Length: 442
Ligand code: HEC
Ligand code: HEC
Ligand code: HEC
Ligand code: HEC
Image 1 (cartoon, rainbow, N blue to C red):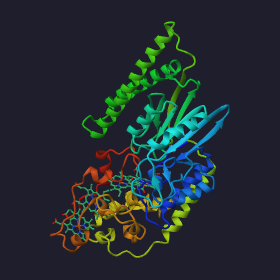
Image 2 (image 1 turned 30 degrees about the vertical axis):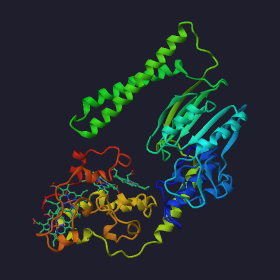
Image 3 (image 1 turned 90 degrees about the vertical axis):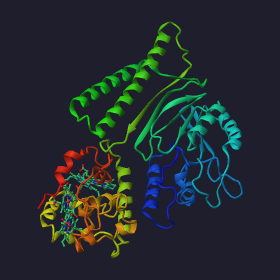
Image 4 (image 1 turned 90 degrees about the horizontal axis):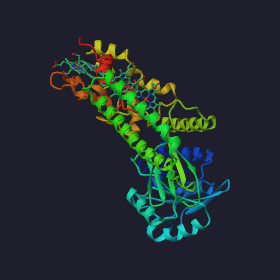
């Protein structure tokens, strides 16, 4: 199951063929191949309108949304479905969070008016009732308080990351981080009376192990790193927060265990759960059929974007060829660094025309962004992480009149961090790395 915000990273995309649309189609293909049971429509899924979703729905893609209606006030998507798993019937309802902008032919109904009937009707036909929702957290909680028939609310709140299950009334509310970074696994020992408890005994030893591991990690970091560094402090803080949360969970679990060992054995009819967020790292084994779909999408994007190429003249950069004549020593040094080959690196993995990769592997940076189409049409001398990525400034004017117009010489960490983000370089230490790329003085 998925609560949505699946297809696009932005709220609206331009009409016509694009890399974003190809990616969205690819995600639908991959989910289909994974035989996903239900996906709620969330606002970011509608960045290209409803067409793509309705077409895939016709092919059997299990979109759910109870509160998106067409011009005749009929649901555009299935509001709910029942899935039989073994002997258990699972009811799944979809709700779409507030749309970012009006969409033609789509009306968003208020869940407060439609949910009472829908829940009553669906609950009658199933044992477990699940809501997939991209509504704001406060509204999910309101729903949990109001509807005791709901057992689980799987949320899709942007930027909230993984959420440890919390109980509100009879429901557990939880979610996983977005963009496929994690898979949430919720293991449920189900009893029909609908009461939740946590499975304490086996969890307790796992929690104690985790606490020991975190303490060990902290100790090791304190011995190694330079305590003045911001990055180090942030990391320590995160681990400390993690440790404190685990310590609290242990307290709760110990309390419950005491309760049961005191003879007041908790009722066996209480449903218990344990959860895990599995980080989908590169190191996990691959599924060959998914890899094949991915390779196909990347190839399509490559072929489409390559055709955009045309000559660009109005760029604010001069390019390293223009700097070389006056700064031969620095240019020779730079050629020896891998920055000078950053675009070739993309070529090697067949991604040299992928707009998601280019901004960090060519001349563009967050300080001097280059427009989308221009990224695909750079002259050779700008198809690289070049002089002007770091020495920000009026390159063309400086070359014409170096005494009057100056380039930045003093480097700052933030220039590097626009590309060396934790996601792409989890090991960036400025003091150490700047030494490896700092051009020598003449
Ligand atoms: C425009 C994006 C961008 C900026 C800005 C940037 N880098 Fe990089 N850096 C890269 C990429 C991409 C690579 C990998 C290149 C490759 O292997 O093809 C890289 C590689 C490196 C390497 C490995 C070099 C080698 O030769 O092995 C170091 C060290 C480095 N960067 C340090 C820095 C520092 C320090 C800064 C800031 C002063 C910085 N980078 C600014 C994108 C950037
Ligand atoms: C936010 C900036 C950024 C984006 C976007 C980005 N990269 Fe990179 N990439 C880097 C940096 C920085 C390095 C150097 C990392 C290091 O020195 O450890 C790098 C290194 C690499 C390398 C060589 C090192 C390795 O991991 O084998 C490859 C290959 C690569 N990137 C491919 C890609 C592809 C493919 C994409 C798009 C899907 C992409 N990158 C998008 C910043 C980026
Ligand atoms: C990844 C970042 C980066 C790139 C790319 C880069 N430089 Fe540098 N450059 C530095 C750093 C860091 C220094 C040292 C600054 C200092 O002394 O504080 C430096 C110093 C210089 C200096 C001043 C030397 C001096 O001390 O007088 C010149 C000139 C220069 N670079 C030219 C270039 C040229 C030309 C290119 C492209 C061929 C280039 N740089 C590419 C980071 C970079
Ligand atoms: C026509 C020769 C010439 C060209 C072309 C040229 N520079 Fe310079 N550059 C100089 C001179 C001369 C200085 C020293 C200026 C001074 O000290 O007032 C300088 C200084 C610098 C400095 C030190 C900071 C400063 O501005 O004083 C950097 C960094 C730099 N150049 C980078 C570049 C880059 C990057 C390019 C290409 C975009 C480039 N230069 C092209 C002649 C040139």
